Length: 371
Image 1 (tube, rainbow, N blue to C red):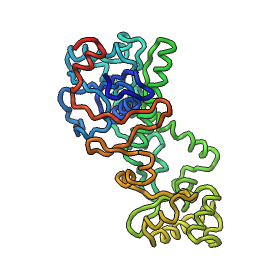
Image 2: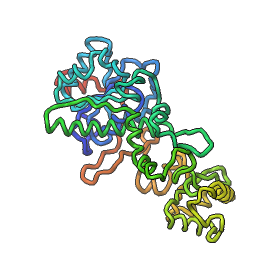
Image 3: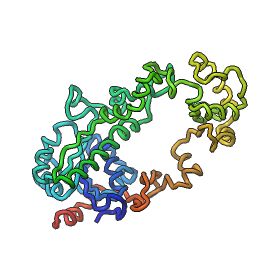
Image 4: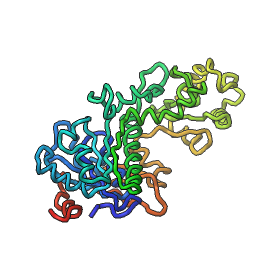
């Protein structure tokens, strides 16, 4: 049986072909929410695999089988499992699964209700489809990287979050669940083409609407959320950082009150772009005069829209995060608990990371009725 015994996706069977990037994180989220996720592992780690053992949080809660996909026996084993699952996910370059004999046509012939999820950076087609790439490249091309970073500095986004997770995993997850709902209604499966360039571009629609309205412009440092003094991070006296995001006038007014700047002529106008550099310089000097803890004592929990910039270990220990139980440790590995939260079908505590091939016999027995 699946290691995760509760959650809104209990009873769902997912087959995941081992790979890198957002695909294993998609499998993790499905397992977090109760699905029985079977990971098809290689017999031995490949040259590009990050084989980190119990630290592979992205594999928690899954069951692992080990097969050689370059053999007929290995492919036949996977096809037997395909017949029994609701969805299958893979993150190979376009054409690889077809060459293995596990492409969508073959799998859908074996299971017409199958939802076949494909995760790539560039998509299944297009001039770049066969090119190598990573998160940073995909969000650069999609436009999602453009406003990342401070004016005058090179754009940089948090590693893997905007592309792999936001534009990749989340869109593959939504596509899978939508496809499964459709298959249950119509009896017909389909292929989900989830590309990071597509998803990260789609995430831009809110900003693109603001750009069309003139609120955002194609010049870094000149829009509401990437240039003004009231939407930035600041270095403190101890070398730590804090974040300020007091965009609305009432929040900005409170920020000025808290900082003792009410009535200061430099800050009399919030949206005069010509004053933004001077205002930023003043706030930078102000925040540099006290420690992060001192600023937390003054601003945290107020409507000034403030938060300290924390590393993951600090975040796990923050009172708000502790109160909500956001983080946990399993086998000594810090990790975030399942999200979002469900009132009627809560997810179980995350499962452990499986050993390679640990569940080969039990999976074949559970899904196919024979080892």
